[in-house]
Length: 507
Ligand code: AHR
Image 1 (cartoon, rainbow, N blue to C red):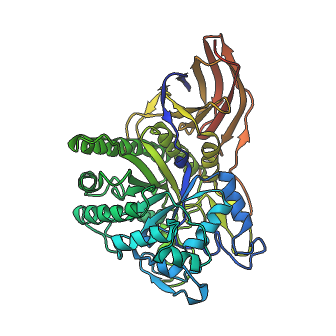
Image 2: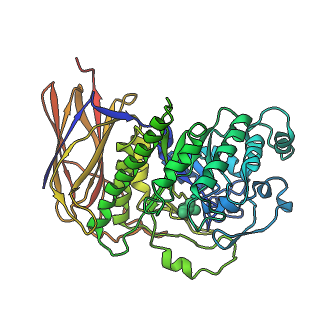
């Protein structure tokens, strides 16, 4: 099959925000306990954090990490997780029917965040708690002078404020599964009042209001309109969440789901602009896609987990090659919408629907989805170029006109590199790609890295890495000073990253 893409230096979508390459760690299952933290493990540091896990996280260059939930946050008392560990209460976590020991809390997590060179995106509890408690947490974390809560932080041994810049106003507050879920009006009111107190405490912070839990919620659309009406002047972002599933083992349909994700983004952006017009505001609300991933493999197993245990193996999806392709399509969708999506969090990071898995007292290993995320996080920063694709389309059970090739390109001016990310959705045939690239100086192929495996159900494990990238040779550059052509072959059912060096300046 043949495909053509056309890139031009002057035709861009926008700059990627650093926070587009984020992830998420919730107090859920083994994300924290026996995930990032396992005192007594041979790789544990003096604080009990696993160095092997921290290394894999650092290798992903995760820009922000959302914490502590998720559904967990809607029942969380942040005060339980600070101060002397011996005095911290063991609580029932009603979100996941587990026990939370509170051995890790705000200060320990902030310390781990530094180790992995990331930034915290903190969520406040707007389920069982309210506006005042949210403000108190901002004061505890960020206030540099002397006050009740900042002095409390100091008494806990943390002199310098954490200076957390990005805060979520609750989590999925429209979902009946949420502890103390709310109607859009109830949530909009409490979110606006919490936002006022939080920003009066620290005017430098930015806030994310909860959008719908997913696009299929019955209140989707109405929820965003009502909530934004309340919070427009106080929040900078509205959240979107999406999890893909392939319960019927219909990969062509599964890979078409990113069209739905694209529509979701454009619809929410449209609603934000509707409110902008209604309020005659100069401010644009941007999008925080702060939960996205594939999630379904562990659903059945989770039903059998004994309740009220500490750190059980919940949501431990083992990802396939097909899932890596789906994640690739999601990453491409986020990049294509970089003008509106400023924040995104792969949910989650360790053990819980995660790219990184751990064996208690054993090794840490990389799932299939680790690789597309790493490629984009390390090489997808810069100016996203418009990338019209000319390729055959197919229809699936739920979607029509799905292009066999999904692709986007990013120009990184500092490195002088153009990086093309592409998924070949054709499960049977390679795509012979012609990429016409205009208005750049000379170009040279640096690398074409490919992730593929004939068995779309192939998974990695603690013992074996069946799915990992390989370097492909054989691509070439053609053309003249005005227009260059990259000729390359993308194997059937593959994730591709093609890096080109821009040599010299275009006259
Ligand atoms: O990421 C797992 C869960 O998915 C989160 O706790 C919740 O916000 C969402 O429903």
